[in-house]
Figure (spheres, one colour):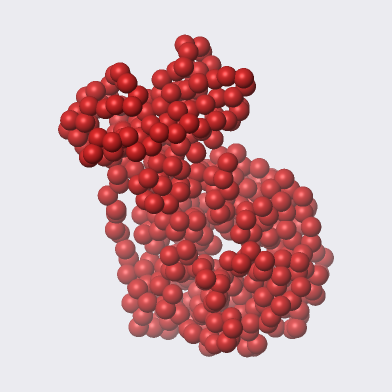
Length: 433
């Protein structure tokens, strides 16, 4: 009966035997979209009390950090402002901001009453001089960051047509310093507020959010077998599957009711469609060998997955209704960990000619392949942000697994600073406020 250890050994033997490469073009892309210039002019206080002064300062810093993190905006330094004094919240001197090159100007006012802190947010379109956002946000006094995140989400939506990512979280498999077992942790989109969810003394890996963001599925080892478990965001965990053998790499379906997973319950590692109650709905592959790492298309009609059915481990797509299979990758070796993005493109981790793992992207037909990471050692487990604009992945470029975020074109890399060994990150859906 195949186990995770056996799978790893098989993959290693395959990697030693692969020497050929195929004539599928790989492009190293280095395109940089021009960020939108935006000025955050400041936040007035409803009253001159130390609490509000600190809240206004913190809020401006948090909103600035959020907009920079999004990679969508270039925040203009305050010392460059030609018109630094706010005389009226709902009016701007257009010529001064045009001369500075700003496309948008952000202002706000902080108020506090009855245990609540409020932000009156204002955004101006410099090209027209019009006030395009005027909205009041409320939160408890202890949750000032939420005001920045919610206001930032609306600013991103104004410019891109889609809400920002500031309510999202990232789950990951983690070995804290001095520990041995892998745990499941979750953190905010920017790496802050990391907390443990699963600390059961076993090896826990491959976290995956449910489509509503309320639970995280993951693979967890027992004495003999691997099973799928789920935990809520408070760490309350329950077992989902009870099959013999290995249950690895769950990925939730767009319908929110099902997930796909690789099971070895029938002797071979194959892909199955299961309900969130763990009951089998459909066996999707029947080919001998390794069939692992399934992930659904945005419409839920297909999955991508990895298989060694042709000798090398490559990425394939499968039609869930007809079970027809199409090969997608023809270059590299050990192509694995595919994810299907919201814009119908696919990411995967593959071993290139330099014998190191890197992140690649391609369209849903296996064409227009692009290399997103290079010369940085063992880049694996990519996951798209909900809007498809950013990618989170793990890399050993510092000597141990750490989490990085890049734009979907491979540019603007940022490391999330975590003291232990962090791998297999996955982005949540938008969780709201």
